[in-house]
Image 1 (tube, rainbow, N blue to C red):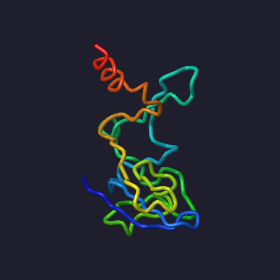
Image 2: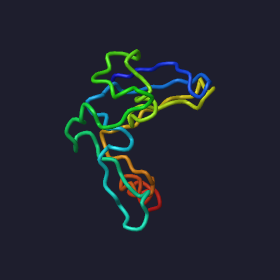
Image 3: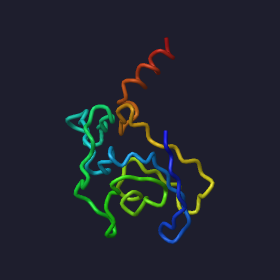
Amino acid sequence: MTRFEKRITFCGQPARVACDGLCSKAWGLSMRPRIMLSETDPDDKAWLADDELNDAPVDPGTSEGGHHKPRAARGPGDMNKWCVRECERCVMTGPGELNAPLKLRDFSRRLYNIPSSDPARSDASTKEHR
């Protein structure tokens, strides 16, 4: 997996960001297709996996500070404000936490907003208690 990493200044403090460089699959936090898992809890949802989706739109209809989604990331220099603030594939350390680990999200499977809703986790916890 490709991994780009970059040092930035966020809210006046140094931070690091990383992404997998798959801009063609980046929809944005607010636009990535998802399924709702509960009729009563609006937070109980799952983002769809990459293989469940076509490529994302070149322009998903969002911008951040005048920056738009990159058409393709060839390196960390292509990462911009849209990536940091809107892209679901980009992760960031806390401001001032330059040595904190950065773990990319795995879009090879659905990502559940509430971990206990994830069938894979439920199966694992059920198996552990047997």
